[in-house]
Length: 145
View 1 (cartoon, one colour):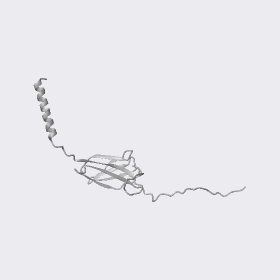
View 2 (cartoon, rainbow, N blue to C red):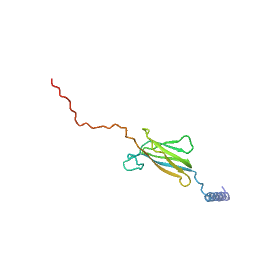
View 3 (cartoon, rainbow, N blue to C red):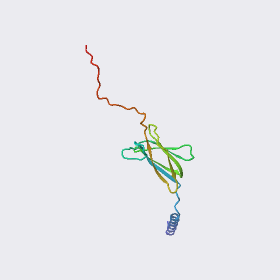
View 4 (cartoon, rainbow, N blue to C red):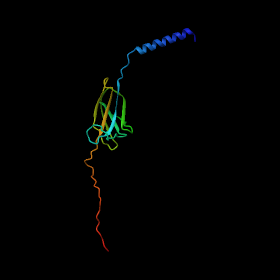
């Protein structure tokens, strides 16, 4: 390749790079919702030490006006990420393997809040469980023959 052609190609490449770098950055119009699903042992909706995350919980993310929610699974540590969501209002909730549900949380994604993190507490209702009592001794009747 001759020297003049190579110089011309390099100059054109540099000009294109300058034009592309000088252009304003395109604003993203998609957001991210992430968070954790955890067992809320004391039902106070605050994650605390000793309240473990729930592995493989199903997380539902539903945009306002949409008929069907997006479903994702939390990982083995109870964390989830849903990316590439168009801006708007979303309802987010979770379900564990035993069909216990977390409360629905509303998340707004826009230019300011492009990413949001939510904690999804699942409370187990233990009010109908059977109470077990430990038996320490048994008295049997004595039979003589």
